[in-house]
Image (cartoon, rainbow, N blue to C red):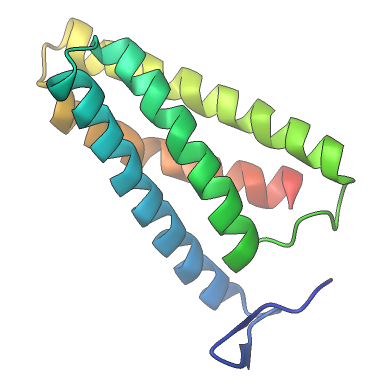
Length: 137
């Protein structure tokens, strides 16, 4: 396992710090996702389902790279290609959850898209963390 350090402090085995950093990574990824969603949906007039998928994909890339730098150690459990395949599988399921929840909240319950997107992100973040922690890294 490679060492994880921040400001000279080794936190490689400190799960509390990793969870806090994961929340930071996830929080900033959520801001990225919400910004893109708003820009695509409100700014460009793209439908909420397509805007959801586009924003999710962009924020997932951001999350993967920053998460590997700060939280997870890439390549420790699996080779890089299998790891990336698993990340895509988890992300595809996360996207499916996103789309399903957005359809329920906006399409069926007729909520406004932006509040629905925020709630959806909060729900899906739990899936993302558990899946990455348990099955990938």
